[in-house]
Image 1: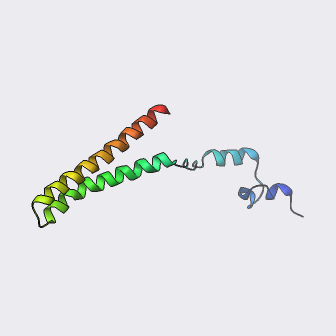
Image 2: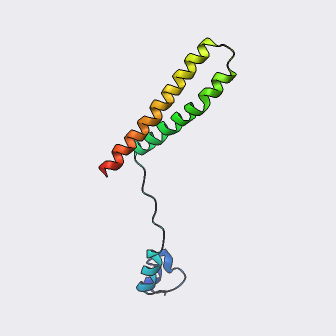
Image 3: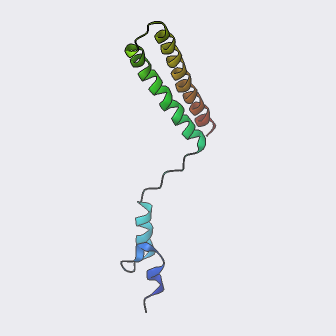
Length: 99
């Protein structure tokens, strides 16, 4: 029958190893990334949407046929994009200051 120490860890499937070698191996492994919270996801979404609005509002204005509503929509989209982007940065600054 196999030795019970061989089945204690998946790392020991290839044979017995001493605890010092196992600790050395585990200490050099990468740590898994921390799970992101809802606030961080909302920040990223706000920043991405703001960036897209800032980037594509001038393109939309350039390709639209009417002159008057185009200027209003351009200012609306640029203002909304800047608001979302700056809001996300301020939320992130406040969150990182707390930690």
